[in-house]
Length: 400
Image 1: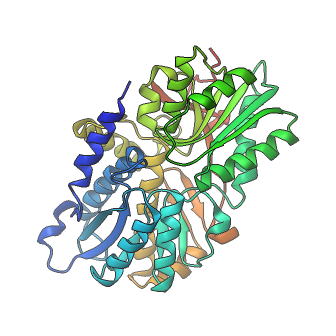
Image 2: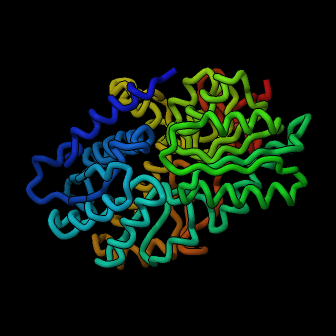
């Protein structure tokens, strides 16, 4: 399996490219400067590296197509170290010292909320890709590419439990174990309520502090509970660490659902076999019927392999990031402007076609439809398994 040291090494390489200039913008005398942070180091780095590579690919292609309104694009990326308070400081720097023209959001809910506060202070549009708690996003000029819908605490677990209910032998008992990381905790509490309404018996509920690395006690409690399904509110490598702790005590959960795992490490891990998670995109039909999506998949596969990323396929994280850039480009071109207010007004009344589907921003706190689907690790790769119309051809949910 992919070692934690390997992921850390990749993060260190990424951290060395702070102030990244993407594509041929270096030679442009008057580039459009887009500023953002990503968790290039710290516990969120394994996933943030995917967002970094996606942004590089998008900006390079955008510049080949003429940039934005005839100007090349320069993408400035700073390392927020997986810390929301650092993200807040860096976004202040981007606006005041670096004087960027536009903002792109960071990775993860806490950092996004920090960036949102800065954007609100300076009346800047903030497009972002991984905001997990819509009710906290009060700023009227933020726009999410993470298509959770306006009430994900109800709708996201409903999608998961619909899929599980389709099994020949649906689960009857559930253990819910979750990080206190805000978006994970929020969705896990929602899962408790939806599970109760669906008649699932909750036989265990446990929480851990974000940054925890000792999952032995949690693994032991889950083993003793003997649930039919384990709902795991994890992010980054937490799911891997929990499954490794379970293996040490000779326990393998019959069904395990993960929220925001690092896609590569979990898919590559032997313990990740048949793991279930959420998705908005996987690199198979019907998603890849979109020619833009198909080209992105091809390019990402090549670049991810060359960069030594542990998982070289496009999945939900890369697709959300790509969609955020599509939203930004659409708003600039539709308004023929870099004016934040004009862009915000247009987005509120419009829909944007992205590789994950058509996004809208006219519901609760500028969120739109819930486009979440369920995926599973099968034969070392993530594939969509529910709903059926989005499943990979010939694919069903595996339990063995």
